[in-house]
Image (cartoon, rainbow, N blue to C red; front, side, top):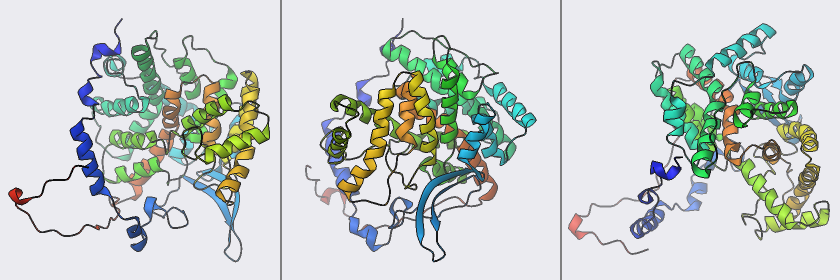
Length: 469
């Protein structure tokens, strides 16, 4: 059996930080410091947010909308229960619709986001058949691209695979809408395969587990195929598939202002190809401040479960949450992960939807005690945050609070948590890429003000050496 060391991918020269690099890093860091006062002086909206934390308006979209406030006749802004709309349809209504009608919803949601309307029964059947046709990779792609170059990071594997698919597309650089639509649907169909097969390669070569490759089945939904491909026997319960499907729907889109979707707009505006645009968005989503938050939630709860003796003792749970906020325990960053959101204050509608199904799954998986712990933290954390931080604008559980718990109950590996986000969000990225191509005529180019001083040229032989840092 061949293991990862046989591939010679762990060459120390690619990861060693030498003394010289450390010295140069100090020089680099000192050169990169900008006085924080200058940002205020020049009225810079850091992170594209104003002084109140609101996003700076940089574009228009017809794809989705987030509503977290309502306005009085006098213009006052009042927090409200969060609402999320896909093409004008409230997310709670969409989820209720396909659950009441007993069908999977991710494919229907993808159709809505890309084409701007809910499909008829015939249109949905045709769309599902089209995705099924696209659920295949080029000959020997799994063997030559995925299995021969396994990675420790599934998001990097996914991005590399997407970029490699460019080489198999004879119209890779064509940005006409019909061609971009074809590429978008192709990537939507194969993302689950790229992610799951990348994980199988990782598991085999890095953890010495048996290698198995289950092919997707055309008649199954995206959620069903993910579970089928990931599990050795391809078995899953209907509840498992239904809840994973809901997770994909809830993560498919979230306004145009999130980091990875904004990346889609920025990169698309340069005129680049679909594969490069999607790879850039994957790079954004990989960041722990964006797509990796649910992993931190799971890690935090693992820590809580180890250190809180009685999960039903509200006082003990609250005191430990205070210790987390005071940077005394867990990762000492002072954050209760999964609590709060940049836009929502009273509630995140995605978390509200998730919560109704989490309890059902916890019963099936016999993990009711953990569910009660999550519920206790969700209820107590806002009070603790308000007390410790003196913040009373409203804090609630966000979608990441529950999604990690759901994925763990589905026996999904942590390595796939963020790729699952990508499998869902490719729907939103595709819609936004097409919208950008249709409506934009200029490359997105933000302004940066230089605060550098002026210097006279110094001949090489007269320059003073850099002090050791």
